[in-house]
Length: 219
Length: 219
Image (cartoon, rainbow over all chains, first blue to last red; front, side, top):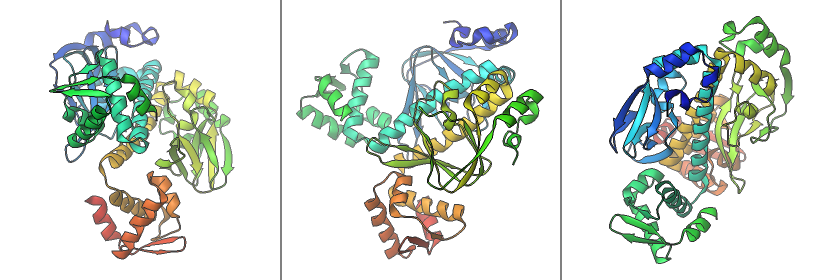
């Protein structure tokens, strides 16, 4: 993907603005597990995901984590350039969940074009609204959904992302996604196992009955 | 407040754009408790709070509520005009928490100016980022804070908004703000009473020790 391909409104940018976007972007490769951004104090630039997978999450004072959303190939990460907007007053941490190739557009470059281009400003608005929608979904989940439903949905989502029913993920990692302690995850997984929904073995969770998990998630 | 006073970037709008904003706005008065907006299907327009107080909240499938944020004099409500952005994919309900005077700018008018004016688009971005920040704060609260802390902070916030330590609010209303059942609120308030932090009487909660509540909220 070329830089401008990330911007469906590219045709509404002037030749000069297109140039500035394209020429300022730098491609960097990150190993799995690398922290790319850590809170509002960081303002490294806009991340365009060329390959791999990013995870955006928040951390409590006690160090517990909850996943806000994931970013895949073709997605744009706005909060890594949080200084482009004064009113972004919250900390998001971004890590490479898989080895990733990321185009980085410097915050100042992006901001200066956004200030002169209504199409780019409105496109940025749409990105933020999309992330906002994901966080509202999460809020809804943690407010009203019991943990068995959230865990069932998470396992199905993982299977979908990874394209396999054999998930290589630790109970602790699941806890960090869902904002729960590892023990809580282990207990619920064991319950799922006794019901025959999953099979647990060292480092692997095998989904035996996606239908049963789907049913739990929907209840 | 004049319409244009709500927009600190008004000087960057053309005379024609200023005219369109001002002349399209209609002032409406709403009684306390009126529903002004109900989910993405509604798109009544941008609300500018002239007087009174609005409450933005979400409702679970079971009808339970949680307050997202409040809007006061001088604030702008974006989600009542959710159709100005395609990516706003979540339902927010807005009610007049007090009798309110609201300027309404039709969504189409606002959208058309936003599409041609980078300053207005960027200002809209800032409004959304500010609301996003409030929701992130809420997420943080419900994820990591115990209910006693949230209730203590809520009581102090109410006292601050109302300018009194005698709060005329039902336990059910508090439950609707915090996303908890009435019984849970009553139980915790009774505990606060036995500790001498508050005094409960018919329809009134009197804060006896703001300092004690502050201490709970911070823990």
